[in-house]
Length: 301
Image 1 (spheres, helix red, strand yellow):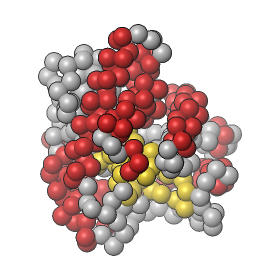
Image 2 (spheres, rainbow, N blue to C red):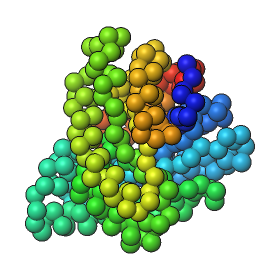
Image 3 (tube, rainbow, N blue to C red):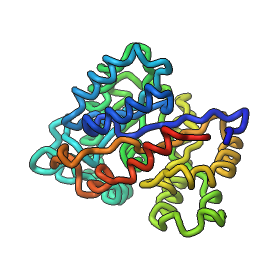
Image 4 (cartoon, helix red, strand yellow):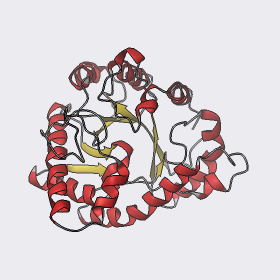
């Protein structure tokens, strides 16, 4: 199935540098010309080796992927030495949850300010680490693991970090995961295949996106229509092909590019460690990632 002629599809692979095996699989897709962009975890144990693999192969890629920094407050190690128990455990592993950060965003006071400052420090450290290792011709793009940057307080801290790093004018793109809902809930072919929790996520992110977009537009930072919330956990080829006509048509009304995110890498059980947080531990090892790898490698849209 072809995309509308005036719509460019950006196939994006999340979670590069989650592990060596995870990243090797994503490199296979890049070599095959199947991924247009990837996002890179800054704070996992495999980061250095995975970044070296990427840079070592960079000049050999016929089509070089756009790179994003996959800001991570949920898994991995703190790079800032954070000691806030809401963000880090006593072993230095990130342990924030989306729900707790969201609730704290709406409780004013000194504790909120302190948490925002701690998040800013962590995001600064993560951005600096990856951006310094970027290939010279790669633009600065940003997104986050489980879309935590869409939480108001985290979004504020991100702009604090970019301002302190003097990088606000250098940012080319920030992901806004505002996905059309109707193609998924009003489709007979997809009826019953979309988990309720993903529909709720879709609506919450839609509401949060309005405020975020205003800020991005103020600074001329680009964003685009998005696909990857309702089908989170299983972006399989069959259902993607069924949803594509309506999703792509909806995206065309709001821009000339749509970002389709998937998670085609998989972490081997032998690579398990405490840095994979309890909230999404299963996802890193899920066989559904094999499904997503095959969907991208054999994609028809």
